[in-house]
Image 1 (tube, rainbow, N blue to C red):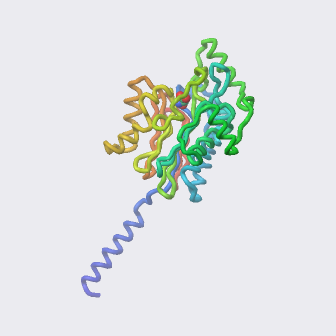
Image 2: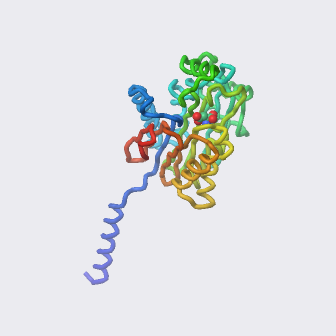
Image 3: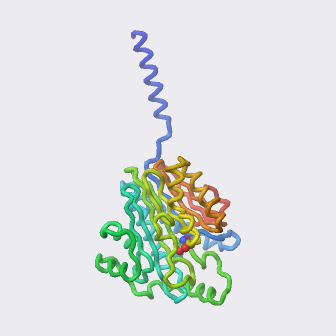
Length: 331
Ligand code: ASP
């Protein structure tokens, strides 16, 4: 073989082995949360702890399965949130907390990172799965945000399931309301909570979804950050997808979800640095407690919170299911 050919063959085979050994970039991933707060290991019974972990694992795996078979990130985040809305353990849908009138007022939003389209609903009392309605607002109306009676009329027109208010009654949430009214101190779980998911699909598209019952004993008509695009939910393929949870008033004032995206876009911060800056610095300085789940287009995941715990789970292509509750469980 002429010398030059020999050299080419050597270089080609070296390149081939280094490509073969290079770790493959994950093409899809998902991260979810079920609320943040003063969640201490010492205060949670082992059975409760196990139940939360099981539900979180099932939900994240259901979303992952959709992504694995080539489904979209929008479908994955919606499916996860619907599942958690149907579970009375979490403060969204079926398990929503009561406002000061003893009613549920549900808020939800969804955003498509590819088109920057978004849909949101707030203050609905009869919609079984508010996230489904938010998706319909995004895809089947020329609007972004519908509230109360109008949102429910739109749900009816679109054939989205409405239920009697009694569907949302749970003994535990009713007791929390009575405690709040009697000015007894509530655990974080009794006070609030939210569910949310962010995902990257095989097409490189990001999406985020969030749904909540808000805060126990909230004033009638109060809307938190969860349905507000840029506060509780945001997705943009160029930066990240975010779903937040915590004391909504602060998240609105700190414009949490969009702020993370803005730090990435304008200051070129990494997902990790941008989420830390907003949650641990800006939000914390304001007195805002809570956290968020975030993902970028390279399947990096960040799940920072400035409270004792956050119910959270994630799964990246080819990786193991990660589920955690307390601060000491790192990710
Ligand atoms: N962010 C929600 C709200 O303020 C509550 C929560 O996430 O715990 O309505």
